[in-house]
Image (spheres, rainbow, N blue to C red):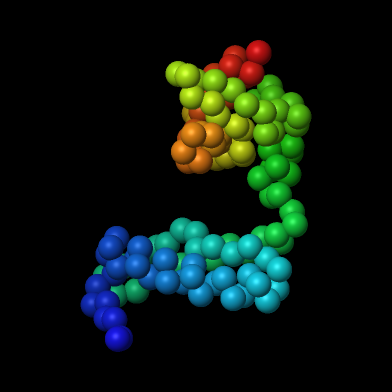
Amino acid sequence: MKKSINKMDDASLTILSDAINKRLFDIEQEFGVSMRVGNVSYADLKATFKVEAVISSIDVRKIDFEKYCKLYNLSASDYGRKFLVNNSEYIISGINVKARKLPIIAKKISDNKEYIFTASDVKFKLK
């Protein structure tokens, strides 16, 4: 059954993004890269999707963390370390240098979702 989209809005962009991500799987398998749809800009009748491709064997987040961690008084070895916040365990999984207030990305172990933290809070919790 052919589906029709008449207007670019949040709901239709979510549907399109999910469909694109499913179809990117074949390209990932063929070329050995990890691909996903990133940011989307849109107007009523037009949308532009950013597609990110990363060589699967490289952990880009780890490389970025190692490159920028010193800006936040952290060390490269802190990547992947666990810390506790409100009885929940998190593992450091990345860094976002564009986020001035909450640059540290950590994955909550219990639900596998990512959360953001201040560098000073993470540094304190790692002690």
